[in-house]
Length: 141
Image (cartoon, rainbow, N blue to C red; front, side, top):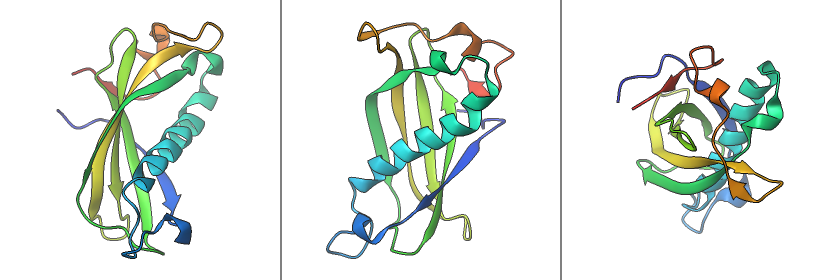
């Protein structure tokens, strides 16, 4: 995959409750961090759009590769970008980094599908998110 032109960094605060008995962030907590990143991404991107209600999607899959442990008090950011955009789905990519050292802690993605909360059904994504005038770069791969 080529490098995205635009990424969004979402800072994450490591809380004491995120730790396991070994003193590092519990593996399941990383998925909570990915959820926080999706919300942070939306908060940075969607306010710039005229119709924020059209940005609804839900998680269909989660994948994560752990590279280095995250410890209490460590600063981390989640670098986010979108790829694999299809009619009804896209991939929300995340790289968890220590911004001070540049060390990669984990890398993964969530497959997101368009969702209509009124009908409870999968729906196509809004075409304006896929067109050339979108407010952020999406890699179609």
